[in-house]
Amino acid sequence: MNGYWDDPEATVASTTPDGFFSAGDLAVIDDEGYLFIVDRKHDVIITGGLNIYPREVEEALHGHPDILEAAVVGVPSTEWGEQIAAAVVLLDETALAVHCRQSIAEFKAPRLYATVNSLPRNPSGKVLKPEIQNLFRTGPGAIEASSCSN
Image 1 (tube, one colour):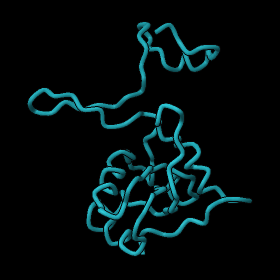
Image 2 (cartoon, rainbow, N blue to C red; image 1 turned 60 degrees about the horizontal axis):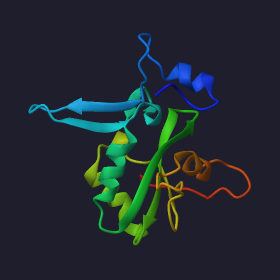
Image 3 (cartoon, helix red, strand yellow; image 1 turned 120 degrees about the vertical axis):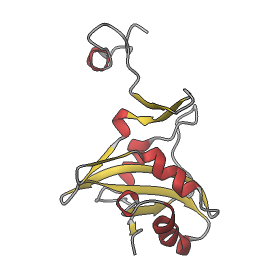
Image 4 (spheres, rainbow, N blue to C red; image 1 turned 180 degrees about the vertical axis):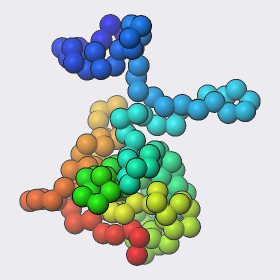
């Protein structure tokens, strides 16, 4: 890859000092040598000085039978820097808070969630996380988010 089309700043930001392109994927190698992509570097949520990978929280939410889809993003917080927020396509809203507490560490659980009919996606099916972050911004048309930590 030679760079981003008509975006020299993104190309410079994604190129290592030795000239290689970095997609920003974060990966781990297990004890048997298998490589697993765990998330994207620019998606990491830093809340209270802790790094939270949205994919881990999304996988925990997907473990609930009433959650059809989930996308997790960081939204600004004056107290924590960012807080975890989840947009979910949900069958039963009452069970969400209990599931959050049982399936993931408390500091990783979403503090906010918004129930949506579907997640916004681009033509290739990728979830548009910036649009999900906009769900939690205040102002006209914003979805009122409910607390998930009740």
